[in-house]
Every structure is written in C-alpha cells, then in structure tokens.
Amino acid sequence: MSRRIAVARAKDQPSRKDQGDTAVVVERKTKQKLARPPLYRVLLHNDDFTPMEFVVSLLETVFQRSESEALAIMLHAHTTGMAVAGVYAYEIAEAKVERVTALSKEAGHPLLCTMEPESDENGE
Ligand code: TYC
Image (cartoon, rainbow, N blue to C red; front, side, top):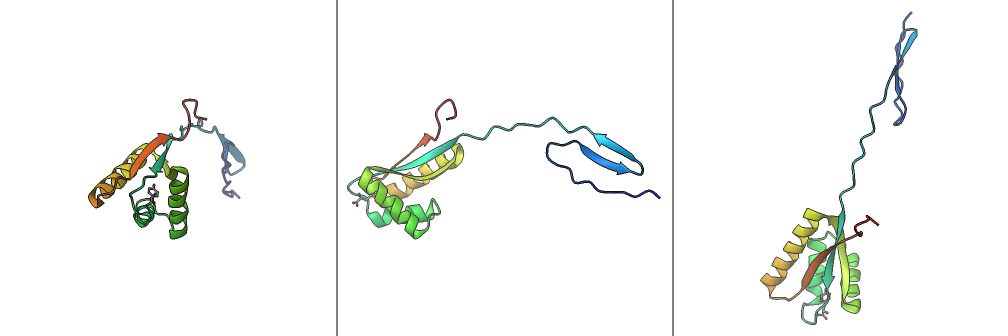
C-alpha cells in the first residue's frame, strides 16, 4: 500500500516528499538575502514658542503615540533640546516630517522637525 506522508519543510533543509517507498529529495532554493531598508529617525527640536499641547497632539496623531508616550517624548525635547518621535523607512520618515511641518506652519508655530539616518554608512 502506498501512503503519502506530508513532511514539514524546515527552513534550511531540503524538502522530502514521500512517494510510496521512494523518498524524493528536492534541493532547496538558493537563499535570497534581502537587505533591510535603512531606517531614519524623525526628530522634534525644542523651541520657546510651540505650545506643549500642540507637540503632544502631533505625537499622538502623526506618530501614533499614546498620550503618556507623547508627553514623555515632548518633555524630552523640551528639556534636552531634541527628541526622537519615531524611526521609519525613508519615505515614511519624509512624509512624517512634511506632515509635522505643514501642520505647524498652518497653526503658526515654529516647530522644527527633521530626519537623520539611524545608522552610519557601515550600517552600524
Ligand atoms: N518648549 C516649548 C514650550 O515651552 C514646548 C516644546 C516642546 C516645543 C517640544 C517644541 O519639540 C518641542 N512651550
């Protein structure tokens, strides 16, 4: 009697398919290594004019931070001069910077928002 047994394929192992009495070994595909996209920190800079509540609300709406996270990030910027609002792939970070800049301008606040690579050229 021929029985078919499904053999779960481990990531780095060749796959085996039982075909009756004969075990067929299928060579695994060459592993495709995908480089991780470089990440960028979006920074909020302190100033003397932008209201604290405005910065907190931006952190909640643009960066999806909870109220307590937003408050902590805003206070970090307020006391040290700068804070990381979030870390994203290039296009996302760029869109966040543009959104913050547009909303701040619209509201008449001078809030500065910039981005910088998370790692150096060596990816470290
Ligand atoms: N320093 C501002 C104030 O006292 C508040 C503020 C916090 C502004 C963080 C910018 O990134 C900032 N109203």
